[in-house]
Amino acid sequence: MKTSDELLVESFASKPSSLRIAIVTETFPPEVNGVAMTLGRIVDGLLERGHAVQVVRPRQARESMVSAREGLDEVLSRGVPLPAYGDLQFGLPSRLRLTRLWTEKRPDIVHVVTEGPLGWSAVAAARKLQLPITSSFHTNFQSYSPYYGVALLKAPIEAYLRKLHNRTQVTMVPTRAMMQELQARAYDNVMLLSRGVAHDLFSPTKRSPALRESWGVKPEDCVVMLVGRLAKEKNVGLVVSAFRAIQARMPAAKLVFVGDGPLRKPLEQSCPQAHFAGVRKHEDLAAHYASGDLFLFPSLTETFGNVVPEALASGLAVVSYASAAAKELIVCGENGVLVEAGDELGFVNASVTLATDLKKQSELRAAARQSVAHLAWEAVFETFVGILSNVLERHGRQFTQVNAMVSKAALGAPSQERLSHTHISPFL
View 1 (cartoon, rainbow, N blue to C red):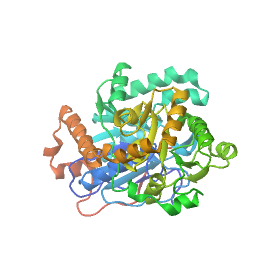
View 2 (cartoon, rainbow, N blue to C red):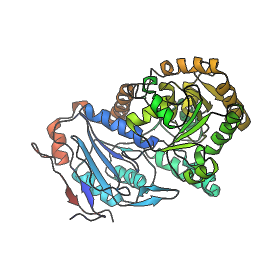
View 3 (tube, rainbow, N blue to C red):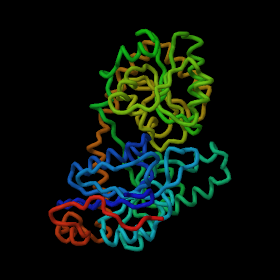
View 4 (cartoon, helix red, strand yellow):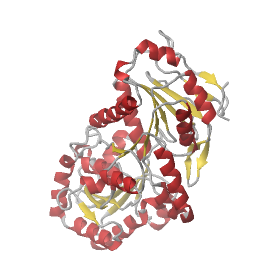
């Protein structure tokens, strides 16, 4: 019988691999958020290319068994609910246990995805073992602090994040603007790793008249959409304001929220006529995107914002602040509309103008999908591995020349069989 505080280790796959990567993260599929979905895609791409991946993460709420996947090892630790994100757990400090784990099963490189106590422990353990370390900057935690009444912590949080990332050999960011911003904030060795979009999944062809009918709208009615977490830092209130202004001109317009979060109940009370679809995944999510018309994205806390390229690939007319992914992907007036960051009145006016100008809306929707055709996950996978290989080379190891048998011996991997559900000491 497994106890909740046990550390579950499924060993690295035994087959020879180009690279053995230990990834440390607080979030991973099936959780639904931008970081988890991006990381899930990258891990899938690594596995398809023959790399072995070990994911170290907290066991999430309501999680039971972990499905075994060839080449993927999941190391589960105890976690504590993240404030204001009760459905997520952050990992507790575990430097000694990680040091023991990576001493026994030494990876080629450690990649830290999130910056909580578990991530800090991973950096400390990897440095102690002289392992090369890279990291990703996915979330502007210091920008979130004012939304949760802890604005005074903004400076300490920023100092913590900078110190953690500067203890790694590369920090990967998803946009050029973020790269320049972090460099200006004294972050070292910042490199660009963009994100892809699943063109085979998100497409205008997924539009569903039956789904629109279930929302109570006619083919000619305007459906305004927001996809994402319903939380303060996403600036959801501005979407509601813009929609009410649209509805004053177009009474049959419909507001559809796709996602969940702490603001859902207040929104249901203040917007009883809106449709709340909750969390949607895969083909169901693609159908929801494609069945909308106008996509509003007013967040100012994103490092990227996966929903923007997904909405564009789905053929929606997008109105967004000129920040993060939207600033790099949208040419205002050609494939979407950009508004100066923080200009709330401008955002509302742009939303009303586009909703009521059907000709312009049609032109933008026609151009949207092609404008993100260059965002292929295959290129992201190759760039990620390229960055890791460069770090390894600078660290004194040419991973392409490492003898597979030597690597397996260092990791203690069996030659013919995988170890499954092996237990070592619990983190706590």
